[in-house]
Length: 323
Ligand code: A3P
Image (cartoon, rainbow, N blue to C red; front, side, top):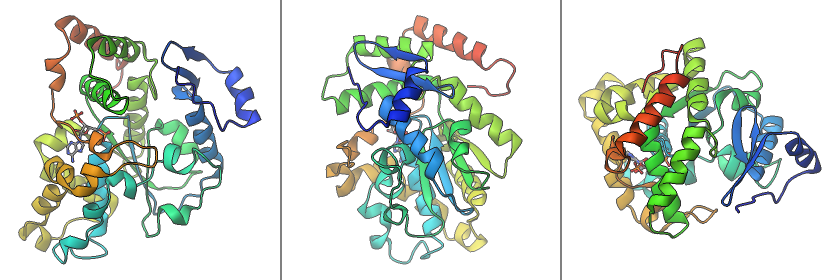
């Protein structure tokens, strides 16, 4: 069992004893504010909620795991970086060429608040605007913003592709072959809503509703739209972040160059991403795989497809959110 309950404060232990919990032969999770966490991730969430000091210019990149977080980070870094040096100046010194997007944009719950409640923020983000990321649902993560009007971007992806991507990712970091039985048990967990950061639909709905309530504060993006209309979507992202492309940039092909820099092919071919690791010892290369829409069709049976579609339809009923 992945217990993940080191570093818990006495207060968090008491809190956990009052929360819904789930344990099987693989994981031990608890449900806090409607979302399932490993125990030590919950400690990090609480550390973040209590101690983070937001700045109004902060940019927060949010997602459910395996929804295209790495891509969103790369695009946002590339967009913001233009304010420091014009895009064409000296691509050899671009931060994305020497570091993985996860090394540049830290996660609140892993990089910053997992081991301490008082991280040295200057270690994580030295320039303005500061870029951070999270997998928390909006209502939980908003508590740490303490009313600050920071910009929040959510990358949403079809649940079936998220599941398949997660299945491959887990196999990679546990050094196992992808196995059908693992997929089947992950499928059941996803459908039951009891998975790390699940239920998926509540996660997506929290950001969807947040984006409708306050479109200047929360931008809802979709992985699939990024794939079909990358130029339109990257312009939308740049405008939302407050770094719109100028007419000159558009005319000189800067958008295509930026997309190329952030493409899966380009990033995964860089030395840092072929050989580097996160401090939690995940190979950077495991964040890059196929990057396709609809890979689930190669792995899920029609029965599985039906079951998950029906659950999603039922869970999203009454909202305008569609998959
Ligand atoms: P697949 O496993 O379907 O290929 P996350 O970044 O949230 O962990 O999500 C990982 C998924 O995003 C993987 O999907 C990965 O291949 C894809 N991905 C990573 N970088 C990408 C990029 N630059 N462009 C498009 N997709 C990317």
